[in-house]
Image 1 (cartoon, one colour):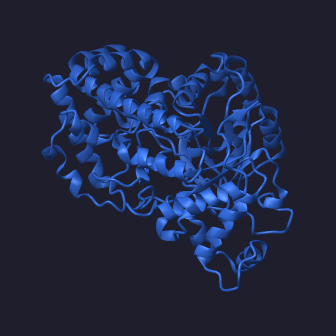
Image 2: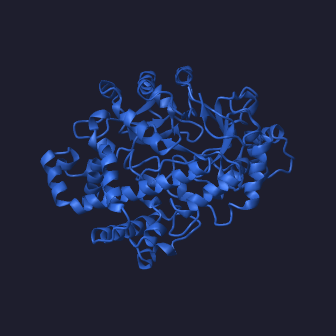
Image 3: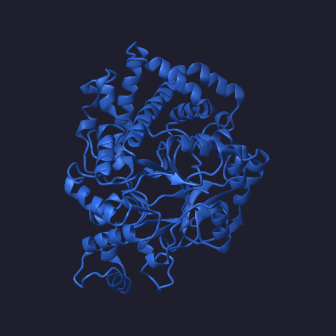
Length: 509
């Protein structure tokens, strides 16, 4: 199994980077953040999924498991090479820079990218872009044709999810699909062009990270969105009825985040069908992600042991059932084909002995979250003195309140316990608690300590990134132009040095 060297990193999704045009992108501000990480002595940058976002603007509900998010494309590069002019981005430049206004951003961004595509079609072909685009299309052949066709059909149906499309397209009538391919070469070309731009820019960011000794921790949702090219193109791999609609859907039972559970609505895998195909879909996904990231965190890993299955008619996740999944067989096949992989198992939530056994069998490190440490006795697995080396510690995740916000809102007993455990003064506020939790995480024996940038900066609940089970206001927070200061980097580097995390990055067998 892969073991991580002692190191630390920062969690920040690229949409939250500062910069012009309404959203963080894969341009100069991403490279500037890498420089900041390097100056702070960090070895890892952890991000959320980079897929094109669908329902609720969530990176965990993407239109594809393979495609990239067009909203992350850096327009400054397109301006520099002549595919855009200032007029094309004028409206985008008026968007707020302290948060992402997705409702306004998405149509404006698409309009700008469409303008770039028109110029490319009309003959503005900088450098060797034509050859690069052709090479990208060939390399992405396994998914790009289905994805681009899916997006063209979504446009034809005014963005409706594919279960609301006309039957010939919903059920993939071959003649109907071929007709669309003939009629829509320009539209198909646009979506392929946009994916080329995304992957070209992401590869540049990845190279810049490698040059600075920084490794990228990517994120893979265990389930795909129903409204995705993957589900539409390979319905036989999912629990769907004859009309292509889910029979049962994914979620989790009542937990820390919700008294009624979380009804995600994702389609569930037909594991028997996947096994008959030697899990080739999963192998292709993992191969793709580990080409783009150095390390891969798999969200809701316990779903490979057993998943929460809910009838599609239910309005909450309360009335579901645990159904066994073939995780052991799947990851045995993965190891056989791909060897030992640098994977992190997100093992939060309802963890049974079977889940623990699967993670131990795979050899993947799990996660410890400090915000979960102070609600019970000293046998709490999330308290640092109970850790082993082979795990990652977080002050919080993208789904948690910030550490400062958590402390301010925590029940009195939890706050009192945290105050004693972290050796805080009685007068401590949320910012003090965030600093103490960062200190505790860095001091722990965990191989890796990853901290959301909000907690490094001591920000309150106003900087929360996502609240599970809610719609609206999520994924919108952004860093300010001045928050990633030299002073903040020096303080983080000092902690990193004190606790022996200023080491050469990487994994060791």
